[in-house]
Image (tube, rainbow, N blue to C red):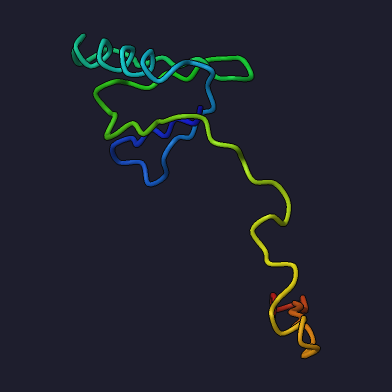
Length: 102
């Protein structure tokens, strides 16, 4: 399951993949928040190791059921309607110069 942790004064959220069930994540978070100012929210990662976050710095925690990750070109339509009618295919390319991409 993917867990997203927002931390005060940090522009990006922390994303952790864990095997911990949602109910256990909620219990661990509640316990850490109840302990007070110097408590630590600890979460085990799926590939080993643990993430430790000061509980008083947590802005939000987002988690839910497991979601299958999309890999490859699954989000791209491989046969546009125009191609089926013989209108061709639009190709996009980038040229890298000494001044960047154009």
